[in-house]
Image (cartoon, rainbow, N blue to C red; front, side, top):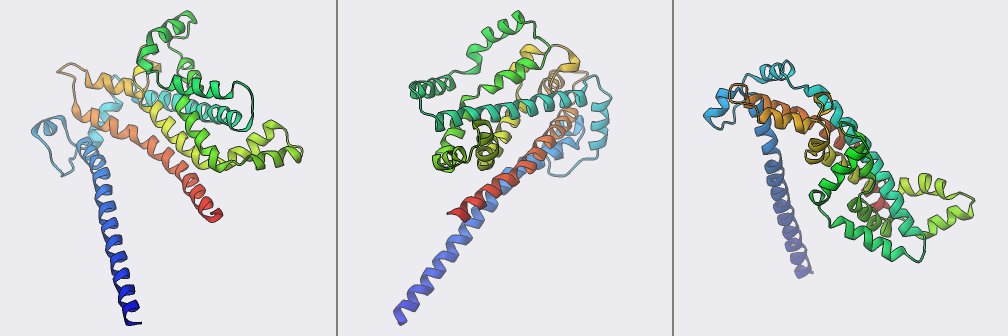
Length: 288
């Protein structure tokens, strides 16, 4: 009995030590992740002359001044943020919905070319965007869609990476028996997908919505090739123009405050969608 108690005490101490180490590591990782956001907002509150002097952890007094200079500058920052939000929101919704629908078709239905189509989609995922950029620009010019948001939204429907993620998630979260039960109850395929399958995929949908939104929000390469009108340019293009201004007009304080301002919509989207991730994980643990 005495030996069992000693083993229990040693096991409890070992578990406590492991928990303490885990908490220390998590705290350090959290500090490292948040430190760069802190530096960003510190730099956003400093003037250009203060930024050229070097690094500091003390906030400056020029946050409002930098913001007013951006608002009264030549770059339409608010308009650019609205353009970025329209593109990112529409692209993320269409991308996740149709990628989930494609994954659902590959997961649920059996047909001859099923494996070939799956392999082809994965092969497309290996092709970099830069390789197809020239052909894409010629296609956009031929269709007279330059200075339009359509080429930045519609092509995002074909997203092999999102399709693959949703397909793998369905393997564990969407049993065929549930789909068969819905068919037996008389539900058609569209209703089965929209009212039964999609709600079960909420955690994966939320994750991909966040990733897709952030990617399209920060996308600079494709919009820079298509959008030439100042009123239709996205926020990354305007930030790049601020950074490439000539020596007399360049203001690093404005650049930092614009970057800090551009982060808030991403944080809001994450906070809105993160509850579906947490809820889905909790639901899965209860089922398990």
